[in-house]
Amino acid sequence: MRSKWTMRAPLGLVALSAMVALGCGDGTDAMPRPSTLGNLNVIITVVGAAPDSDGFSVDLGSADGAVLASRTVDSTTAYVRFSDLTPGSYTLSTTSLADNCSVEGDDSLSVEILSSEVTAAPFVVSCPGPDVMAVYRLQDGVSSIERYYLNADSTFLLDLGKEEFEGTFAAEASRIVFSFGDPGDTRYQAIGTLHGTCMTVELSVDMAIDGEGGHGGEYCQ
Image 1: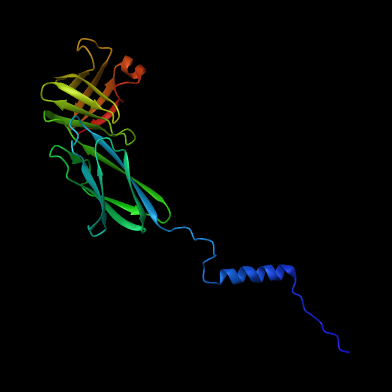
Image 2: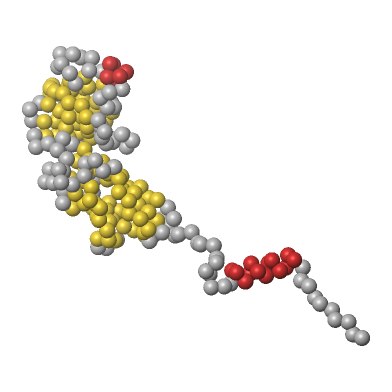
């Protein structure tokens, strides 16, 4: 009588074969692959005494300038997001800005979207009041949102992005004295020494200690 032998594969080999079978199937049970698309956060800052009352649009365009998507924002909008973007080059621009408002820097900003990453793009819109005759912007690259708006009536607005301070100024030869309270009170003053289109600002001791009135440093038009 001939015996019948049955071959049994080791348990580990069976498990491996099952994994291979799942991996080579139609993909319905396979683990999802991570997205290669990117996202863009546009960080919006509106400064100045007369922001656009009815808002404006931030447009996302392709490298050749075609508008792909648009977001409506106003002076209270902190940021907008454009999601699920194919990696590559894009442009950012604005439409429907009020006549007194403008984008600081180039009108169109180039951004590069990377695979599976979030790209941040700062966008500063300046909206000075109708009587502004000069604007000086901090140049330190960290707090560059700060700026002095000088009005024709010798008043000024110091815009810190989230806070604003007002006062009066007096031009004295090669310097500008900014008074945040009583012009005779030297405790709360800033002095800008002019050179060309820039001024070097020094804060009074009390303002520097209190941490108000922005920063000293280089401001340029």
